Length: 83
Image 1 (cartoon, rainbow, N blue to C red):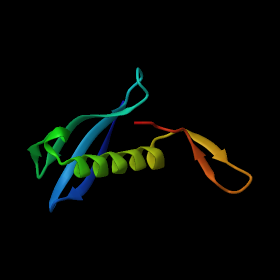
Image 2 (image 1 turned 180 degrees about the vertical axis):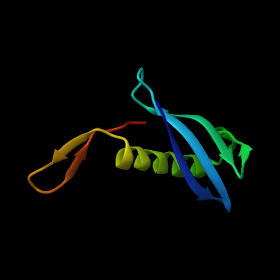
Image 3 (image 1 turned 90 degrees about the vertical axis):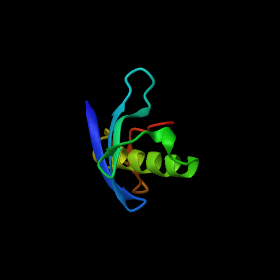
């Protein structure tokens, strides 16, 4: 199953299709457009890549990850994703 994340970066709409790999348990970008045109993650600066992956990880954790409950101190627990 893939997920779609849409955001604004560099004044353009970025649409990213991503997946949680069953083999590596990592988030991976399947397809991406920037301003409606085909784009690749490696065409971005290292800072841009890191920012986008942080946003995708947050999207996954907030909207698609497995709920593990709340600790006694009130911390919400979700299944972790590592890069």
